[in-house]
Image (tube, rainbow, N blue to C red; front, side, top):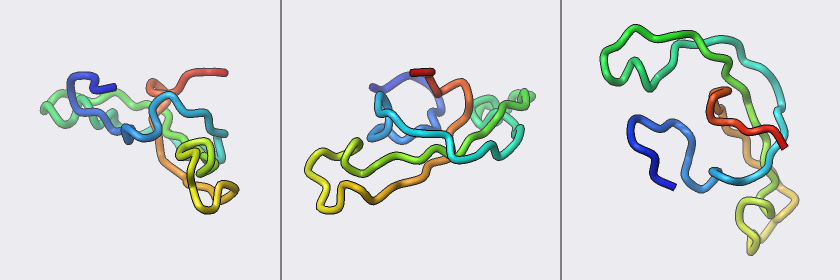
Length: 77
């Protein structure tokens, strides 16, 4: 749950299933930028999660949360 380095995906979303809401485009890899390296462009996605899938005891489980996540942190279902 705590990979080394500059991780941009919130810990509470790791391992959860969501749906890509939209492609935001290529952006410089923030993990490389954080260490002063030249940054490769990576696709950035807006991913939508049901609150009930993230927190099983959510008061409003059908509400959603959107997060912007780089492609290399996503896994296909």
